[in-house]
Image 1 (cartoon, one colour):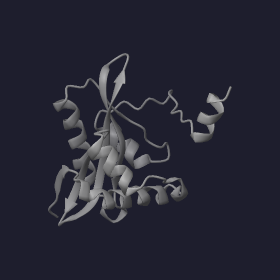
Image 2 (cartoon, rainbow, N blue to C red; image 1 turned 60 degrees about the vertical axis):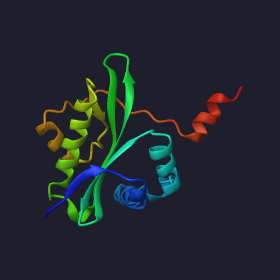
Image 3 (cartoon, rainbow, N blue to C red; image 1 turned 180 degrees about the vertical axis):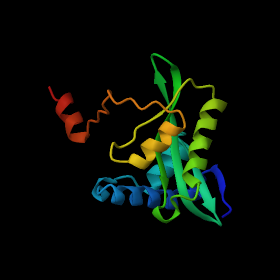
Image 4 (tube, helix red, strand yellow; image 1 turned 45 degrees about the vertical axis):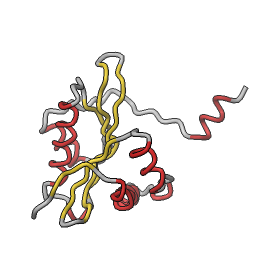
Length: 157
């Protein structure tokens, strides 16, 4: 199978959104996807808030990796991998590994001291893959989110 890992274009965002929805369905969280194509286009291409790499197989986007810069008080600028998604039918073809290597390369090109991401404890295949690449999985750290309801609650006086 021939494929190309490349930077996403604005016109790729409908297929990127399809991948996001596919992941959400896999995680039994379809109703939680609120983002729209216009949001991805605006935030990624007008505002420059993220970089997206895609796995292009014969003109169809079969995988994606979305990253952005963060700042660590310990390490300085880092790259955060928000999502790496490969269509279910394409898993095991090497697309995920190629996208992962592209993200790591992007971090290196930008001189960061750390590439970071979150993985679900139930995703044993990904955990094994990441450990085999030398990634350090921090099992004693928690990911914390606050949704819009929590935000509103915390800003009320």
